[in-house]
Image (cartoon, rainbow, N blue to C red; front, side, top):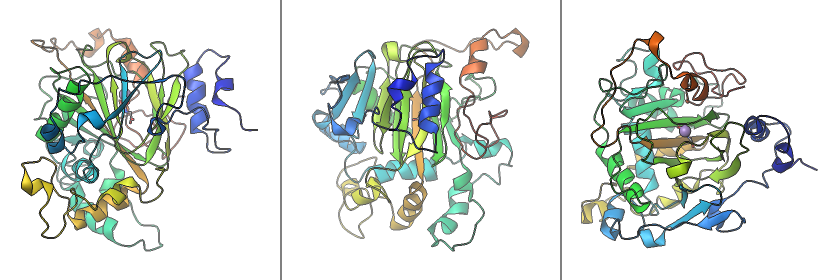
Amino acid sequence: MAKMAASIVEHGEDAFRKLFKFYKRRNPPPDFSDVIDFSKGLRSDTVVSAKLDTAAVSDVEARRAGLRPVRDWRAFGLQGFPGFIFISNPFLPGSQPFWLRQCLKTYPQKPNICNLDMHMSATDTTDIWDKSADALRAPPSGKREPKTLLERLRWVTLGYHYDWNTKTYSASHYTPFPADLHMLSCHIAAVCGFPGFNAEAGILNYYRSDSSLGIHVDESELDHTQPLLSFSFGQSAIFLLGGPQREDPPTAMCMHSGDVMVMSGPSRLLYHAVPRIIPAPQGNPCQLALETQSPGLHQGGTQNLAQEESTVVGPVSREDWRVCSRYIESSRVNVTIRQVLGPGQSFPETLPSHQRTDASRTETYHDGSPDGKSRGQKRKNSSDSSDTVET
Ligand code: OGA
Ligand code: MN
């Protein structure tokens, strides 16, 4: 019989690491029966429903961002994790393609920063989409083709650009945060009880089917009273949510396309990781493609939502959708949104590196950007594409 996750964590000093390895293992594949799947509702004893502020965002505001009316959202909490909120796909049918297209076509554009900038010139990393689209649209040739730039994308940073080496944000390393994503984030935060949230930094992670993201805490933001938001698109993933100590055994859950996760209050600084990408439950191509019949996808001349009202979520052309759908056949995109500064707060004077005292950061986040090419190796440098898994 396959070994259950629960039996793995009874003993041992680093329960998190053991479970990470358990879920990452390929051969034999792990038993997933302990993994919570919120899309199935209140099936587990530890899953409770979460209260949302349904009046915080009107139906019109929600629709403009591609979201269902808030009263229709299915939001969950987990016993023992106050401040953790899981919203099971609150997007309107047909609006995920817009957000996915933003993540693949728009947000990787300059002045935003991506992993490819670390070892390529600005001209080479301009128009990543345009340089990749034709190859991604073409039917597979059967031969081994060189990877497109889009397929080599591992992370993009927005707003206050996270510095993977110093693990800090700074005033001077800032470009305007995308207005559409700001609006989406503010709506989610407001509904979860944080009406004053300000989306100041974003990290997009691009996962292939063999990628993982190692065990870490997101603590570089200066204000931890504000939540961390996470949006997932494309293939599904196993997410591990642990405790405030690395030794605390984590809870495993599925993240599907469209799911939104909020880590706030006592859950804001918990250890977490993504040990494994798993196929989307609807198979291939995933749920997004099935949803594209209605408003998000351009319907040659049909009046659509974007034209009727001033929605932010506009149509995605068939051409663009072909690239997006091909990309997510084997990939997952995750967007995390952070408020970096509290009201009136500013960045401290930067100390010369030898005076920095925050040793924990250098151990925990381990560069964050996922890739699965050379597994078992810890990244030395955020620009390369070796694995991020801590061993
Ligand atoms: C992160 C993160 C989780 C995910 O980027 O800090 O934890 O689901 N991402 O990709
Ligand atoms: Mn994180």
